[in-house]
Image 1: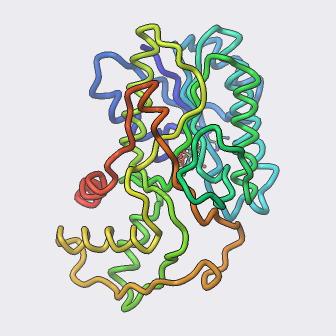
Image 2: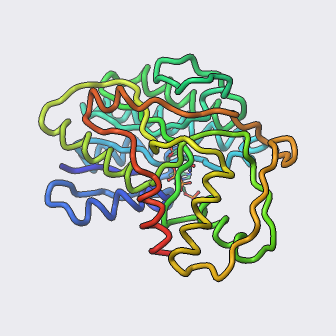
Length: 291
Ligand SMILES: NC(=O)c1ccc[n+]([C@@H]2O[C@H](COP(=O)([O-])OP(=O)(O)OC[C@H]3O[C@@H](n4cnc5c(N)ncnc54)[C@H](OP(=O)(O)O)[C@@H]3O)[C@@H](O)[C@H]2O)c1
């Protein structure tokens, strides 16, 4: 199965390439913005027409949540228009697309895990542009899967795990937000989930729609950091770990507002595609070992 991948050098894209490299079933046409800028409508259409993939997986995004607050045009182009151009191009050649979105489409006021059908109400530009991208895909192409994920970490790129391991080793004390709750997700587990869907699509499955895939045990950024530092110490990656202090969102003001609660229910993804929420603690241990 020939998968055209955008955002191939990002966290998810890199993990998808790793998994596909060890598979006899999938070949990846890897593109990042040097090969294909997803904001260029004509280039997207031509690339898809020439490559003739069996499916498109869109892992390209403007993921800098705070920068997006001022880079509105760029975030809109990458997160909203890019998915629209890719979905249009997929329709032109008659193939499905898998598009990845975010828990930041929710406002975080729920007190039970968000279902895919829960009304979106993004708080910032990143979430708003990702929501526009989702809607564009839904409107352009019936044969789509939208997978919302959250708090992504991996051995690739810059992410919370790497930052906290570094700061936890450098500082005496570390204040981390303890009143925002979500589900850490290993990009490799999400990549495996996506390939699992691709294999079933190849076999004729058509359970199109919007789903959630994230880590299983909800935690706070503070709880996540505690697990990261514990893993760093246990594996000898840290000689000492900083004393961890719980702080409130208001103690650490950032340009973009964050949902206070973005725990997502992954049940419908399991029912439709047989992929359950992932074990982020086990994945964290593997990722720390690689760093
Ligand atoms: N990271 C998270 O915590 C998180 C949470 C929830 C959902 N998600 C979603 O999960 C998906 C994967 O995220 P990720 O963490 O793997 O993101 P990432 O590491 O930031 O990767 C995104 C990739 O897209 C590329 N890109 C940017 N602009 C592009 C353009 N115009 N054309 C083509 N490629 C372009 C980026 O290149 P440059 O780096 O060179 O710009 C980067 O390689 C995204 O849809 C994201 O919204 C992520």
